[in-house]
Length: 386
Image (tube, helix red, strand yellow):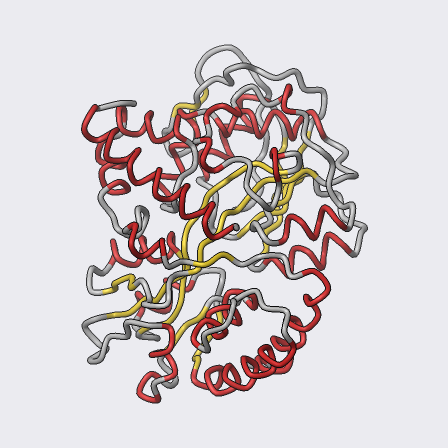
């Protein structure tokens, strides 16, 4: 099962962080600069690592469709500078938004970033092309526990990017009764004070879990019951925000709600009173991935991007800028050896390295096949104009 696989990966990552600590082991487009001899430095002063190895590319641009607030600017700039390729980036804030646009056709994207449960749907719809692992020389940098997941056995179509959890976020200085379970969020005292991710499957899933049901059920009766329960919650949510839910929390516009790992980490660093609570029923577990669209027209540039960003001396930037659970073992080793403060903040946080007990209760969102329209209808009818 996906939940068990992600739990195993997260558990191993916690152990890896401890071992590394003990042993000391290792948005928007910018203008491309032609590749040239000598070191290249971004506007922030970051010196770009050279591609290792350098991939032969004839394309002059690459089009990616990716999650918002998910990429270090230095990573984007360095790729353009070392390869002389213009990187065009569009962003989305939900899997459903991405899938609707890609499946409608007419896009020029080469790479997109679906979460685990969307990958099988995209495969069935013949939207993806198989990856040529011989063109991915740095694929071994990933912790094997994040590879070969049930949603894509053998990684025929996908590669990990980042992973994490969805759990409860709460400002303990402003909330008297701190929730400890998903079910607590229905408490009337939280009405109008909550921010939720604009994520239909996660929100419906956690609602099903509070009812004692499988978060991926296809039973119409159970889904109807979940719809009725969710209809009681949605009016009490002040805003749905998958772009930057931390912003409202830090500003004090909301006091609690549901968010994911990276947003919680940044909010906690800004204000330690903002805590990330793993609900008694278990957090949502997820993994975001790279896939290449079937009609990608810049395949060579796509492989160059994947290879370059897999490098430990490049991918560690995600640990610095967007702190999610990191599947790239080489990046963790590089950060530990070369950026100990960045690494320690990541390794020591229960947000990026969740307790094994919490993760053992966690659940993944999975492809529900022909029941997908039932979930879509629930979201449309319950969320409405909220």
